Image (cartoon, rainbow, N blue to C red; front, side, top):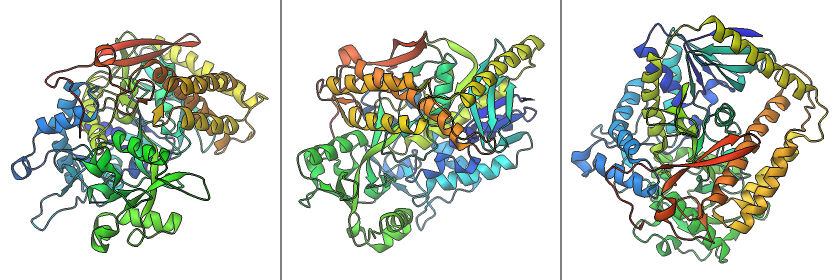
Length: 577
């Protein structure tokens, strides 16, 4: 087992992880920084972000303001976002767009050279900067080029983290090098978790196969608390039948949602915003249309859907601003959106909840105390700017803003590792190596794949857009049985080199713990708010539930606590669009 010492360890290689590395390196050029990715770093799910990044760029031109951006975000969150964090987001988001401009992101511009901004759901003003419909890819490409130029940053591609190792003054990560099967420990002064969300616990999702919530589960098992994990965002427009994201930018550019009667049905649900209502509202509207018999059915998959119609936009707009959407539709289902409407339905997309952090990204325990040397950034960290429902294009802003915040924090948190800490880390690493060896050799009754399929069916059926106590209790009961079965797994592939069976099994163990946490939190919150919509409690209840759900592991069970929503300027009001 190899031991490698760094000052700053970053687990995850998306926009949050890369920006943290860059800012930490710029502020402390002597710090040794390690970026750990279970994929090749440029295959992080951040490359899949399509629509854009939010920020108030030209307030004098379009009468926008940071205050209006904050209000839109807070209202969109159904008043569960922490308003001090939202104010930090909107103040710094424009600077991050400029930062990416300097890195070389090719923002779409008008003939005067002004960065174009498109409308996004729940936003009062067009404030989403974009690079066609490949924004995440262009941002990642620019970040990757910059990171590779930094002499004090090393990237560990295709290294899978299995456990966080903590002592009083040191922190480390136990890793399997997937290319060789060999084990290593990377340890140091600071660990930043930047591993994204866990939407893969659902059967139909817009996210890549890598979004299995590993970093969140590792933090959860290391004593961190989770915040608001019941709030899972369902993106309204996932392509049927494969679930690939059809960016909100398609509606921002003027796309229509139509039911089987060729009716723009959003007039019944959000008459002032129509197709640019927040995502939770549109997702519920689509499912309502389907439930009331106004949807269509895909003959091969049996999935019901509505149409997203772009035909009236014309070839020029589609080819200039939505070229990847056209390519995706043609290549995957043989449909040209210039000629036919696109079949879409809601799919799991983003996890508003995650590792509980303070405004500086420092990880908190169940009693809201800081956990030494541990930070979280991006989708995996719940700071919380999104509350019960994220507005589209705020996620890339969040990743970049808190990448800078956390990068500054960890650049100052470098210190020598004492001999006693190192010995304790080695002991913890030996225990983890033994656990993995036992798992590898065990002749268990189940494979991860069969249990994973069952988990995803349960989440899709019992914890989807609409929820109720009866169905959630059924789902929770099945998940608890699956959680127990996850201790009796077998690894069929006994090779060392790129053992994807071992990786998939470890990912499933992480996923079932997070799915269970979602179920517990969702059943516990007896109201409807944002993406958590209960038919048995259809109203928002600010008197009882204007608070964050905090979960932590407690022996073999889950302990629940709460924390107050931070309100600075905007008092909760009825949410209408």
